[in-house]
Image 1 (cartoon, rainbow, N blue to C red):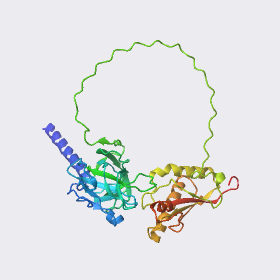
Image 2: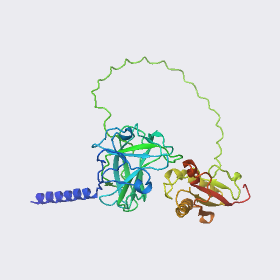
Image 3: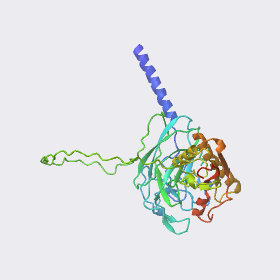
Image 4: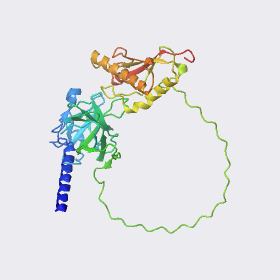
Length: 397
């Protein structure tokens, strides 16, 4: 009787644990992007973020529709999502509400199949000529509190170079209880010039909770075997090679060591202290932010660390960090974004140990362009952060 009670208790505990695990998984609506194949309409269950961000552009596509010469078969089900990035600095993304929120402090794993189409023929938005949108793009995954709300970058894929479907695995570590997810096609970063590219998306998994110390496989794996297994026959073993006669040992002669090279001089964006003077402005050309945001891209940290090392070594230098934008948004938006980006740089340097008394910041908005705002290249040149030397000692400046 005692054994039966113990067994019953174990079964109850196991069933409760299973039910709890099932409830913890977060499910997407239409994770395989199934719908009638057609262009310029998002799949059922998903919201087109372009209708908010880029209302003049068409929505993503349900492929393979044959439109734009996209014919690659789906990897799961019958259809998949096709998204593009464009040479006029616009890109596609979709969003939806999660079955229940991501939890702050809980880690999750997620997988999705990605590929690139060999052909994606459409008109260039920059010159209205036919173009093949085939430059590799990547997938960025955002958490937020509404459709297309990009509060926090949960993870991103590498550049999708392969035409073959591959499964990519992601680990999410949310910093808030996000209720919506956004899947966004984006350019290679840092982005010097916008370009035409595509990414194909299929077979999204549930979002499963995992322990935060659990590793997730970073390397993508083929979503389908490239070819069936074929029975292999062992090749005949080669005849053993005759042993080579041993050469007499030669005593190596010591070579004199060259003196160590001096450490490179600390600079700001390649500008040495000896080249600086009060009032000099230096463009931080390797500093990148997420689109429409003051969040600094991870690729910029090494560059900002060089700025920190210079300031740490030269304690007499006081700087102003100035944010600048192009002229597309409103004056109020440009002032707010440029100030937020300048402050983000100041905050980063202060967090490393630079005194805030040496760090001034200011947003100049669109008032000080350095190039024409009539071209994408000029607008990107104008959207920048500069460091101005406000004070420095007379030693080397």
